[in-house]
Length: 139
Image 1: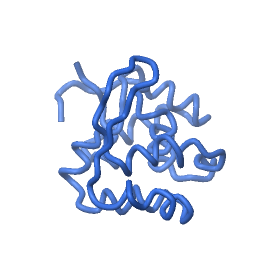
Image 2 (image 1 turned 90 degrees about the vertical axis):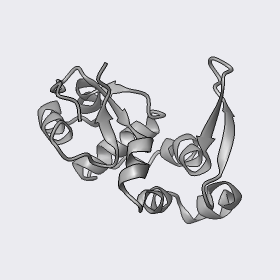
Image 3 (image 1 turned 60 degrees about the vertical axis):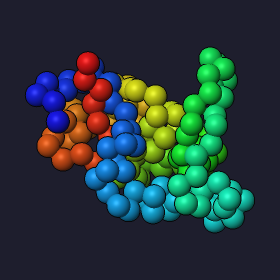
Image 4 (image 1 turned 45 degrees about the vertical axis):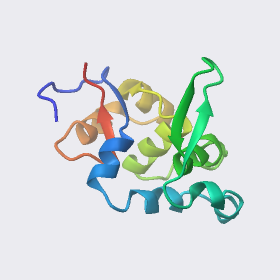
């Protein structure tokens, strides 16, 4: 962890590399977010550690992405019922990053989009424990 203390304006994101290195069950959690229909439809893509070539629609750059992450971010997270106002804080923030394509967002933005006070979000995410790979981007 960096010695720089994150603020409400520090951008955060899901650091999938960190999560993979620190939680053996990370794929189990991601898979649990998929509907049974999506698990069946995308079985060939999400089983194992399959990577896909993804073409960024804005830049036309080709990126190698994890198949499960790709289905989750581009399909499941875009469903209307993916973000539920009754969801716990960590899960709501995690799902918001998935819905947003895991683009960096400040805690101010996260709080605004979730309609929650950003200060408790910052206290939770800026502490010593990392939840589901949600980490600040410190430059």
